[in-house]
Image (cartoon, rainbow, N blue to C red):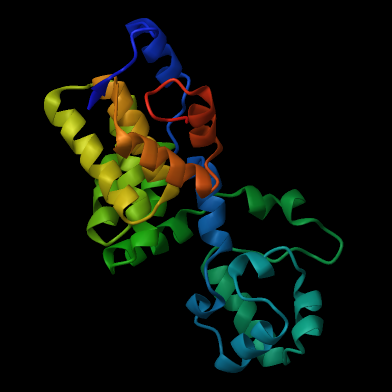
Length: 250
């Protein structure tokens, strides 16, 4: 690696890097919403005929259903009484109540109730091998919404194949500021795993970590930032435009 140019002091380098936020996947509370929203309707264990009718109307995920009153859903998808009752029962099993015709979902008391039953289902899915469920639990634990170690859930998600979990665990360890040699190696390894699997946030975080840990730059840092920038990571673009590191700008 080449040393940073002498015109930038050590403190100036650290300040620039410290102003470059690490990127993880969303706020933990937002992730919980997304996890529920992106659950395929097939996981509701509803009749195949019901699922087919919902798909025909562009209703593919749980999030497509939960804001619609039962009568509206029935009309949109031409559900029979039996299919409609089966769908509602499946939603209720997950602790989800469809809104009344004259009520908004966010105004209903049951919308504000605990999703303890559904969280248990997510835990079961994680133990059954779902890396997305394990990542969801990590995000919830990070926000103290479920018991358990966020790091433990992240490591489970990584074992199950989640690249996003590798990046986000790297962010947690990086933010702890416990930059021992072993900690730095693990953080870099996690970011390298994410970057190597073409995760834009991982490419950016890896570049920032190298700069933060070593206050040095090389062609790899430039490459990571350029790739992240080309994939829409605005923070990477900002660092490139700053031109603070050798070779980052022509």
